[in-house]
Amino acid sequence: MKHGGPFELAFGRGLLKLALPQGAEPTVIRKALLPKLFDASSAIASAFANPIGSEPLARLVVGRRSACILICDITRPVPNRLFLRVMIETMIKGGIPADRIDVLVATGLHRPNEGVELEELVGDPWVLKTVRVTNHFARNEHDHVDLGHTQTRGTPIRINRLFADADLRIATGLVEPHFMAGWSGGRKVVAPGVAGHETIRTFHSARFMEDPLSVQCNLVGNPLHEEQLQIVRKVGEIYALNTVLDEDRDLVCVTFGEIIASHLAAVDFIADTTMIDVPRRFKTVVTSSAGYPLDKTYYQTIKGMVTPIDILDPGGTLIIASECSEGLGSHEFRQAQARLVEMGPEPFLATLTAKTLADIDEWQTEMQLKPMRVGKIQLYTTGLDREERRITGVELVPSVNDAIAASLERHGDPAVAIIPEGPYVIPIYRRAGL
Image (tube, rainbow, N blue to C red; front, side, top):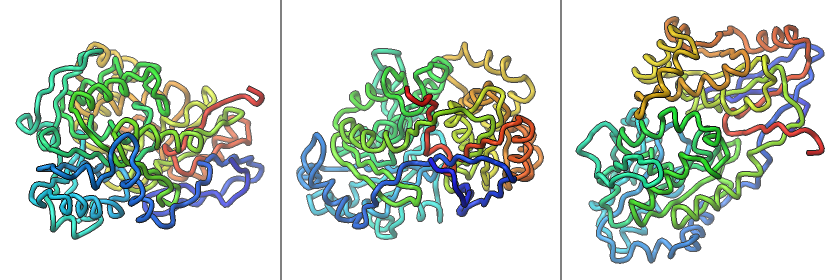
């Protein structure tokens, strides 16, 4: 944390500069600084050669007939350009034919990434020319294998056939706080990443979403995490490459190995630098949706509303800036938002609690209820039309600076918390001395 300027928020592909009113008392909350891996290629090579809980990659590929590599979709800024080629080259050198190697975009129930966007996501033309790169479609029933149900909660296990049937399975991703599953990456790239819609919609039903342990940075007793672990064990042998980035989107940590062990190692690395103790709550909190690519839609923006609520004083004001360059989100999400605005928060929630399978994308609307229960939510955006703005269900503001000034005056408190990187930082309220 710091108290001096300049004050900026991540917004789109740039920064939104803040001009605070005279007398404001700002506290900037951001991740602790971590040393960059300036030789990223060497760090990745070392991770492959010195894995966690498995043999080195060069040995893993020997004798395999096929391979499937999972990559996250465009909503995660994973540096695929740094590792995909070397991973594939190692596979080919080890005897796996290039035409038996698939790179599968783990979209979950998000839209596919195609054309120029897919080129940006993969980050290396050689990869696109050498192997198949395809998107996962959770609604295509015939694309999935049925692996039964989890033992604890009976979640149906439907996994993309390309991944389930591959001789060598590798998930790649970014480890960062996730507002339901605790942390992203690892097992989450498999489910919901390449799971069927039934699996995903079960995860996002109210019995999981409203569980008090389904929160950011928590894996202990988290029902989503526990189900994900059961699913990856059911699939069988899976390995993972996990990356951690700093605010500049530069690599600061990379781990490789058995999917559960290597993911936990990355979580251990990042946890203390991401969860920031804050000795007070604030009546005015200003945050972002972490800029591009996370702030492309209002759907993703809700993550930035949820993560700081522990430091929002009840009845306070949370101001979030998000470009929303692609608008609101999916058709199903628009429908859920319209129902929220029409019905109101409590009646809307009541319609969800009896469902075994959530309607597609309505879970993000359900998550929006959490900050709305604490205080007033205000949104600054440049990317929504009039109807989309109406069904956000929050108050739209034309200026972040004016909204800050009005909030400070309204609450009679000059203190303001500023979280430039939005949901990538988790402020935790802890009174001094505790």
